[in-house]
Structure formats: C-alpha cells, structure tokens
Length: 532
Image (tube, rainbow, N blue to C red; front, side):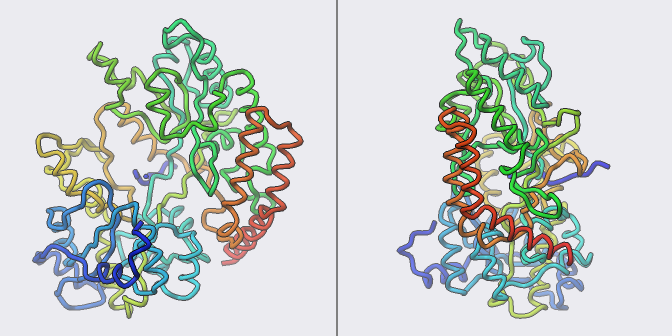
C-alpha cells in the first residue's frame, strides 16, 4: 500500500537574558477581527473555553533574508481562521540558537516555543524537569482533526521517553536520491544508476570518457561531497550507498539490540568499494575537502562531474541548464539532468529515511499555566496542521501567491510584485507541523516527477534510523568527539593512506571510546519503548 508523506526540508552573547526575554514576551502582531466561523471554531470543545475573545499568544520565530512584516495578508488570514492574535518576535535564523539557549537557561519562556533540536540535552533535561506539557494524548486522541495529518513515523521519531512533548515540524522523509547527467547517460547507453552495480558502471564510464568534449579524460566519475554532521566532517549522503548495499541507516536493530552501521559487514563492503573507486581514479582525490555546498558551482556546472549523491535536482535557474537553453531554447531540464532512488541488488527499493522532522513546537508550563489555556493554543495549531493551514503557512493564499496544478503541486505567481509576495511568506512555515498536504511548487515535468516520487512509496522502501526515537546520554555528550576521530580515519582509508587493519582499529577505537556505550544506552531505551 502506498502512502503520502510530507513535501517538505545567534543572538550575541553580550545580550543579557532579561533583554532577550523582554523582547520575546512583548512581541507584535496584526490586529484582526474574527469572522463568525472563526469565532465558532475558537469556541469549540477543543479550545476549552466558551469565550469568543481571540486567543492571544507570543512566539519567537526564526527567519532568513529580509525581516518579515507582521502586517501581511497571510498572517491576518491565519488569525481570522483561528480567532487569534499571534504576537511574533522575528529573530534571524543565525541568531535563534543562542536566543533559544538563553531562554532555556533563564526558565522564562514565551507561550509557544520553537525547539530547534528535540534530541539535544538542553531540551531533554527540560522535559525531565517537567517544563513542557505532555502532548501525546492531544496529538493522537482524534479530538483535533489537524493533528491526524501528522505522520506516524515522525511522531515516533520525535518522542522523548516514548512521549511527545512537542508538535514535530515535519520535513520530507524520502529525500536522498542519486542525480546524474541524463544526456551523458543517453550517449553512453546507460540506464538510471538505481543499484550499486549500475552506479559503479556509470561512474567508471563517465570517468573514462570525454563527455564534456574537451578532448581529455578529466571527468570525476562519482562526485562526493562532505558535510558537517554529528560533530565531524563526513561524506554527505553516504547512507544512500550503505543502505542500498543492505546495511543500516546509521543505526539498526539486530537480535533486539541497537547496532551502529559502521560495525557491520555491509558498511565495510560499501567503504571498500569507495576505496577501490578512488584507486581506479573514479572518485576525485580531493573529495575529502569538497564541500557539498560547492558541488554545483565548482564541478557540475563546469561539467567536471556527471554523477553525484543529492537531495533533489538542480533547479530551473541552474547556470549550466541556462547556458544550454541559450544555445537551444527547446532544451528541457530533463534533457540535461536525471534522478533516481536506490534499490538493492534484487531490485527492491532501499532508501534511507530522514527522521521526518526538524525540531518541534512546545508549550512551556511556566507560561501556559493550565489545561484550558493549553487547549486554546492547541486549537490554533490544530488549524495550522489542516490542509488549509499547511498551505497558508507554506504556499500562501491561492490566487495571490500560487495557482493549483493538481492535488500535490502548484505554480508560483510571478511578476513585478513577486519579491513582495515571497516576503509575505518569509518565516511563517517555521510554525508548521504536518507538511504532507503542502503543495510543491513545480515549473516543469521533471519537477513534478520528483514531487510525486517523494510522496509515493511503500513503508518497506524506506529504511529508518533505529536510533531516531531513542535517547542516549553518551550520544549527547560524546558523539561529536567520536565522529571527528572516526571520519578522519574513514577519509584516509578511502584515499589509501591507511590499510585494512588500521581502519578496523579505528572502528574498534570508536567502539571502546564510547560507541559501544551509546549502543548499550540506545538498546536500553529501545527495550523500554517496546514494553510501553
């Protein structure tokens, strides 16, 4: 059975807590007058009150680019539909982490708190100290129709000690794919590289050929990028290959124990293949210093590579695509680029699942004093998780910001006022939870194909990280240090700078320095969750 998932992916230390909190709790929001329908919705059993007074609350919301304007039609529409007055203090995304830490350490919080990381020790300690409302029953009882749209996997992954203390902010759960030059593949007579064998064959073909037409064999076969993750600098999307080889997505379950991928034969098989590809000149010797963020501009757009691991596709404004369209206006994005999701050797889909969320929305007990107040706030966020609410937060107002194409996609309304229209949506999606009913903005056929592929799959196609819903103190405090040391050895092994026994020794060091303890604590938490 196929199912749909969601379509979505520092304040200076000199500021004192009092100054931050004064701004947080003052806020500013547009004045609204609720329609009779909104007023009735606000007085339903979910709100816990019979008053038609707007539900007023404060929330600090991170944003990127330009400072959002609270006096905009999207926010006003949300307030009208929920009979609320939302007092938003906008904070630059880069500053939000520091502001959040100051608020958490002070204990004085806004009515609604956006938690950036539900696995961080700061949040877990706060939960242990009973600082947030337990939302488990409200999210699953059926009393709130909007919360029914939250994905079950996401709800599980975002738990703390088996309970939900925040509304998870859903993100796309099926993301990691393989991208390739469709025109090069066509010229070489190759199918989509959806298995390890096909991927190796395409990488070798691209590396040994002259597909950029410069008369030299100077193309990277498989372009790897690095990213900061878990405290270390590691290979981005490496689990795409490990999972396709039959391995775990970082952590898996074996004999009722949580096991790290790096301790398994499937992981080692994958890394040995990368080492072989590097020795054969298929992978660039510079991969260890190649940032994922520079892949497009430094390699793909310059036609130095035609196969890479990714989270989507180059956009319609990609410089290589535009240059080719300048020569031939009939060229489409699908003529240049292709994408595929990985399968195992038997042809079964095996895709590493994302955790499905990015932080969550919590309700502090210090500012939300009783259940009646909690329910009034939940009634607002219940709406924001309905189809209408999700699309307001993410797509805007139909006819003003977008035009519907079909049940899952839309086109963006552009023109001289396009910049102002985008500014009206800036940051609002940070308050969203469920995302499975958001429309994906598309502008061509392959964009629609990708949007459809992301939400169409069987549960067995996705391989989850078994540790996602689990907690480990050792992981919280020591994982960064462990990763830094291990990733250094990983790069050296692939580059051929250390041998098999030295790499095995690095794995053993990872285990004895804390890795085994993390696995033990994850296992203990896993067994507790089974009993619950």
